[in-house]
Image 1 (cartoon, rainbow, N blue to C red):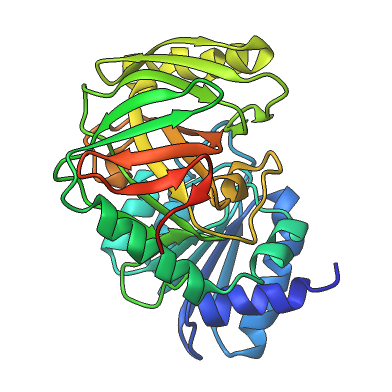
Image 2 (cartoon, rainbow, N blue to C red):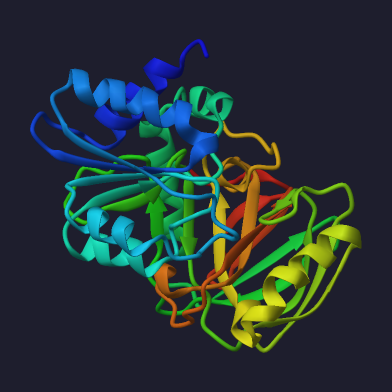
Length: 319
């Protein structure tokens, strides 16, 4: 695809800050082979010591990779997870970061998405992320509303705020590519209200019918909305109550991202927020369950209890 080589170079050299002689581990599955090859070509040209490992397509986001892959990740300076399902919220990823690897996860990435989103001005993305993080620091609660019916109260006091800027140059750094979000884990057991997911949902793709999720005491207690709701229950029920935990509040900051049905890009789209179910351990929370599913909300209003208006009907109010 035209532009893929340039996008692969941006990933490796600009986003990861790769240097000649570093050990690179590329984890991929068959549908992502073309992207993995493009990155390998750049790595070869730039003198990196590269290991590429093909694994089978996972059954869900958050599923652990094979043990051999986990070991290889720990022995690398740079890890790129170019996979259909996300490895972001896995023990393998956390252990590799703890061992010093800097890691980018690209779950569900497509060639078109990579080419488009690597054209973003990540300096601008970082600046906006910093402004949002500043608004969230010191707040105890966030209120999210939307014209579609979202009315959600999210406690966040004391939780670390994570910024995905797309620049992963330091030992132990981690983020998604494409980048562009500010996120945190809500306090367990306290989020309540109604969430209307009207963009896309992990495991279901771009939604034809909105999902209505009723939330009490930090857990989704009701999920309705056609076939997408059925798919969610099929993914969540086998894993028990913790799979329904309200795991994340994220705010998109990437003006190049659009809603396509691929949550990796969708959650970065400027003017959206996302709320996740399942694992919060990787976000600074305490719930450890092998699933993490994001739901995208279009055109939200986001206000903190300190009076900061971050978004109003999908329009950014700060930055």
